[in-house]
Image (cartoon, rainbow, N blue to C red):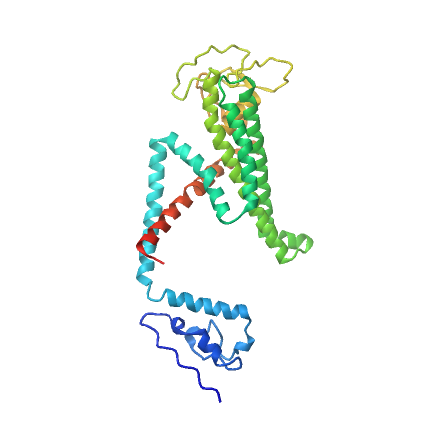
Amino acid sequence: MNAPAPAAPPPSPGAHPLASTSLHNITAAGPTNNFPHNPDYDHVLPPGLRLADLTPDEIDAIRNQQAFLKQHAGHEQQHSQMALILIVLLIGSQFAIVVWKKRHPKSFDLASLVGFWLIPAALALQKENYRFLTAWFLFSCLNLYVVRNALQKPIRPATPKWTYAFYDWVYKICSSTGFMGYAIFMAAFFHLPHILWNASLDSEIKYFETGILLMFYGLYFGVLGRDTVDRLADRMAYAVGYYAGKGGGMPTRHLASNVCCICGDVTNDEGTKLKLHKLQCGHIMHEVCIRGWIIVGKKDVCPYDSERVDMSAFSSNPWETTQRLYLNLLDAFRFLLSWQPLVFLVIHYIFVVLGYD
């Protein structure tokens, strides 16, 4: 006759009843014995259910739950302190970021751009997400090539025009990718694949994941391209010489009536056949230049005389209006992906220093 399994030691005060339960002792009783009935852990293994009826994964789940409860037994006060630290630092970090952005916008924008560029790549490298790393590397190489040409002195007349054209192209692709991902996400959320062509649950989950992935790629590279051209816009405009500056100063060159003040190239060249756009102040520019300056570069004034630009002229159809809403979403996404990981990294470091599990 087999000897009975030794009794488990009594739980410590305040500990969960499962914390002192040993799965080894339970399994030692044999696969045909019933799990001891106790209402405190009926949700783990119902009374009358034999261990022989459990799969190895279910037994591992019970073992992991017991180890977790044993590790965190009596940690209620510690968890309360961790929650308080988390709330205080989250609120304090938001306040500090807002103050920094208001008082030192240039350094804030530069730090946001660098953080938004490098932090997701570092996280992807840690998680071995080579698909994202490949896309990030290719975009970074192309982006750095365009930036290098835009910062050359003296700047060539065609450089601003094609720089804005490139980032406008990136912006359109990213916004289309994001909207397509959103459409796939919502279709999977409302089970449209199952309704329309009787797709399985696994297929709907894949649609759901694909939608989220496309939204992320569209938002991330859209923000990265837009922030890059935002910093390039002022530099290129100063290099061309027709830019009055943010403070409303005087341009270093006089603007002729047939010259685009953004790229410095003539507007009546029949060989280029580029569309033109006339602002309310009377200045005529290439449409690709002013669109890059206003929509992609986030400027709202004429670069020559600093007169306000009528933004409704760039929202003449529903697609343009939707793009303006998409730009607001990019701003929120930038903050979420560039600063929140740093905040949680600081919180994690504080928990480690204090010895919190």
